[in-house]
Structure formats: C-alpha cells, structure tokens
Amino acid sequence: MTYHTEKKDRVLAFFREKPDEAFPIEQVCRAILADGSGKSSVYRIVSGLVDEGILCKISEPNSRHCSYQYVGGEHCAEHLHLKCVGCGRLIHLDGRTSQTLEKQLLSSENFELDEGARLFGKCAVCRHKCKSLFAKSE
Image 1 (cartoon, one colour):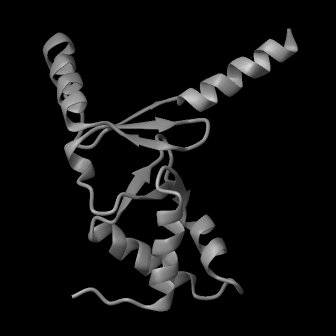
Image 2 (cartoon, helix red, strand yellow):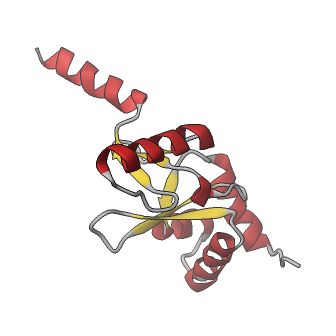
C-alpha cells in the first residue's frame, strides 16, 4: 500500500510535467516548497519514488551529484539511456536497440555495459542550437 500526501502528489506532478528532463533534488525542493521548509520530507518522498520505480536516480559522471527523472514504473535497468549534456534530457532507448548495441560492444570490444547504462552526448535540439551559434558567428 502506498501512502499519498499532498506533498507527494506535488512531487509526482512536478516530475510528470517534464518526463524527458532530470532534476537535482535542490531544484525539486525549490519548486515544491514555498517557504523552503520540509526539505527532508521531499528527500524521503523522492527516495521512496526511486524505490517504487517511479523515478530514476541518475548519477552524474565523476561527481557526487545526482538528478532524478520520472519513468513511471518503466524498467530502466532493461534498456540503455542517452543523456544530453546540453539540456539534461534523458532518452530511453528501446529494448531492441539497447540489446543490439550491448551485443555489438561485447562481441567487438569485449566490453560489457552496466545495467541501464547511460551514454552521454548531445540531442538533436542541442546539436542544432550549437550549429546555429557557429553559423551566426561566421
């Protein structure tokens, strides 16, 4: 049985509004808490939502910082993710593409990816923005 409170509903609504984005806990607290009090309950709620598989915890490479993204119970360990370093968007690769890439890396490089691994790069929108900036500066 899951326990719902108004604060938990607000946390869920915050993440559901932007399912393709990941947020650090501090940003979640600022958005949810009007007066800044009650951060510990937001931390507990977010942790519980990760345990329930509703949110995915994303550890930043070479950092102690992490962010959280709505996955709605989707099994993130069963596929790979693309993480945009420009806008922070997390793209869930479909299972077939994930399996193909993992098998190819294992056979050609003898390299095994971690479960639910994230590959970092730039999404189409950020690449387009970057190209537009360079075009303007020429």
